[in-house]
Image 1 (cartoon, rainbow, N blue to C red):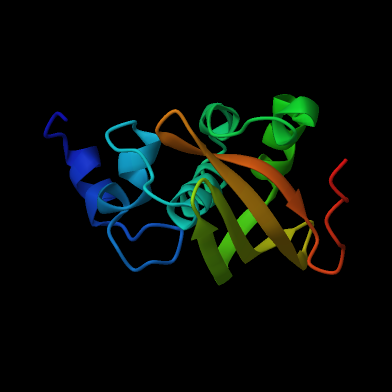
Image 2 (tube, rainbow, N blue to C red; image 1 turned 120 degrees about the vertical axis):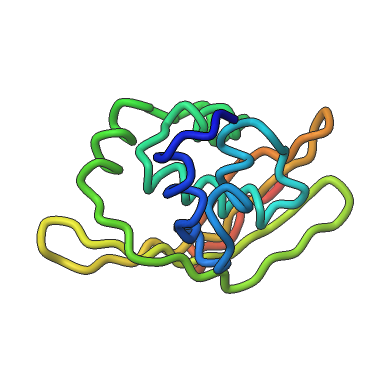
Length: 146
């Protein structure tokens, strides 16, 4: 990476995902494709950070079906642009073999109101990478396997 004053400023900024690490030592390494998230929580944090940057290309690259089936990048971009992201809370994260679950709360302001998006996200490990595959609200039960 070129040693540019803007890069040095960004490297010293804390990552929006809330780990307390510098952006480029955290989600920035994933979003710039220098590293691959090693677990579902790291991927979820990087996706949150991408939303704070309105980086819908990264969001699309890190998802697979069924989540990708109904993903509308333009609608997501408009929504992310309107949101002022406040903080991310990881409630719990777990993984077993090639499946992972992360429950989180994303706090943001929109149209002068505070909002919290709470989701239980599901991730699959395929071809050496984690992907977001589905999400549900915490009070909803997952669909029965068919």
